[in-house]
Image: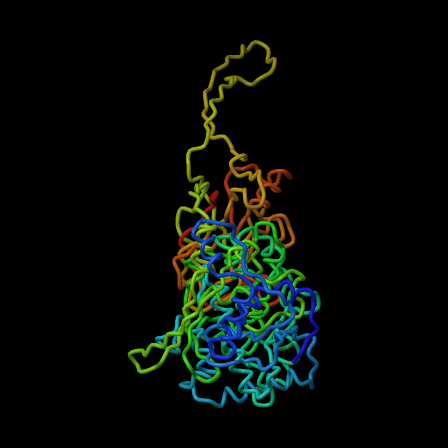
Length: 574
Ligand code: C2O
């Protein structure tokens, strides 16, 4: 497989360098070659001295940006990509039916499905990895936490290698499905037709029939732009969590059937294309720049997960190994022009990494190969500590829990802290006012105290990273199935249509994995409240939050199978 060299290849040189270094793990020759390269380009002693406080931190530079490269990640047990080039993951809408890419995907899936569930390279074992039931050595999928993106990137990476090997096509890559592109919100034809799992391994029967019939996901479900605006990676409304919520959870629940449950989602071939698209957004987000940076604290970088590779060997991989996709041997066909995940600050302090391979035998007799890399993690942590957690203030909250069934559910939120009180004195006439002949008017003074509407406390002045946004927060979830997506509206008048394009629409809640965590689900409603106050649509008084169950096509769903309960709904300033 080959692709033309672009300027990006040069810019990503450091990424490649690291790729070469780590690729050496499986191949002594490559490892030595790169060691020589480092030694030839700068004095490691100087470099070490600079880390200890003296001198400038000039990383070793290479003289030839075009050369490398083997792009294996550190944990593998052998070269995966025979060619020096990085593989391209493509938009499934651009892969022709009858072409090699689709044929290879089908062949690979069929081969994986024939293997028993006990085989780590089988389709069923891989689906069970997501469920958390495949092996005690493996963590279940990470949801509602900061490892959502990194765990799923690792999962896809090893799955792609297994599928590639099973297909016999070394050029196979996972395609992505970008449902947010107008006209592409319906399932791609190749995963629907022919509608027969034996003839077409990309087809899966257990989906909402609306989508297998060619129906399109509603636009607000697949909308991705608002997520890309997130200013930071971490936090309740950081990119990682926001993306999980939208479009990730929305697409899962809408597609329905197997996709709607964590335990079964990986059985449906569309899962992998959906997650490729989720993974693809990560590069796009970083490339928007500003304050958008990948985490580089020590917890994130050293977070380790185990997976099986294509030869059925249990291997592990670290957070720091997956931040640049070329190191994992892939990129997307439309990756932004900047280096993917390229972190200038981190690159400047990047020392030559050294690696050690450690093989451990687990209690069950399985062998794990771990690769321990040296300094960069610790150095990165010295430069940037994780952002401090800001204390948040509750502005309003529900008096109890709610149960979401079909149709509309409304909850009124009461102010959660004392508001300013105003004393009003007014005169009240004891007799009809007016000049009634012969009847003298008498007056009384009445004193009232009025809780002043305090719209200003709901206003958010700043934007971006400096803002203290107002969040709508849901927590304590209980549900069994994933019966529907719920559109959430704030202050929607009874007479107004529940339109996700209207001024009352806040977000959607798609119950997917939230019942497996204590973490709340949060939505930034700063802009929405500011707009409502400015337009006089809301006076800053009681806040009503409406949840409306929707069907596959976005229309109100009046009956749902299992209700969803939410223990608390609140508004807070974070
Ligand atoms: Cu771990 Cu889309 O799910």
